[in-house]
Image (cartoon, rainbow, N blue to C red; front, side):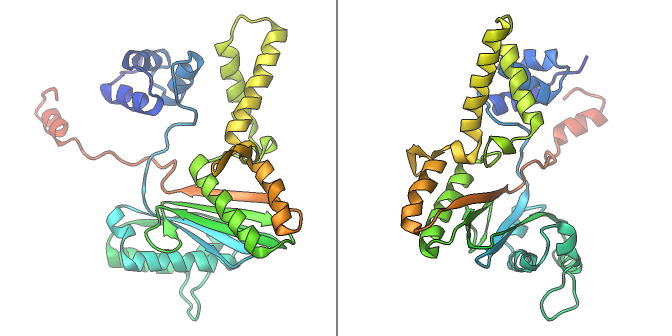
Length: 309
């Protein structure tokens, strides 16, 4: 039996907005497994959380860079926000994102690429920066989008300077239509993506594990219903879920009376040609990274003295 601590209950409560006793019961039932406890609460209808938990902040910057038909997005992490505001660090992140335009969208190719007019690789330059600033930094992830015709729009939320911030988005629109109209639309959709964090472009892009998980939760919440009723409940529940989490089906944040698909269809008259939303990428700084808690010095001293904190 796992030891359920107050800190665990607090974390689960903050994540799910469920009651304290419900969180304690969920952790007890799942032997302290946080992910399982979240699902347990959702099955009981006690959790208000709609998305996977465990996403915590880490420091650094997200950068976006576009050359029209090609764009990259890059996350570089640092130990502190102080370094993220450092001019040298920002210059490195910006230049690395530009270099990524010529790569294949992998960290390996970016690390091996050289700075213009130099034989210094991105990886070596980062090591030099670490030695100069005295703090660990990592090239965490990079992505690249391309279209043969159309535009790739970019957006940075909470920007600290041009193209650098806490959330970055790329949106690829394929069309032979008016570039200015496409750019305006693309930026609006990129802002929408930043705000709503869709998991996929459409239902076909949602991975099987996620669908299986949602199906299991729907079945558990409606346990005891006849099979024919259960099938309809699951189908209806998944349909509602896809409307919430897939980009093309979401209500457009700039006009919630329309879906993103409807907005794209209406935009074709302004662009003068058909418009297809081919792909998007959204990076939020530090998502999925488990950050170390600050040391509890009182507990440390108490433990060394053989006392209870």
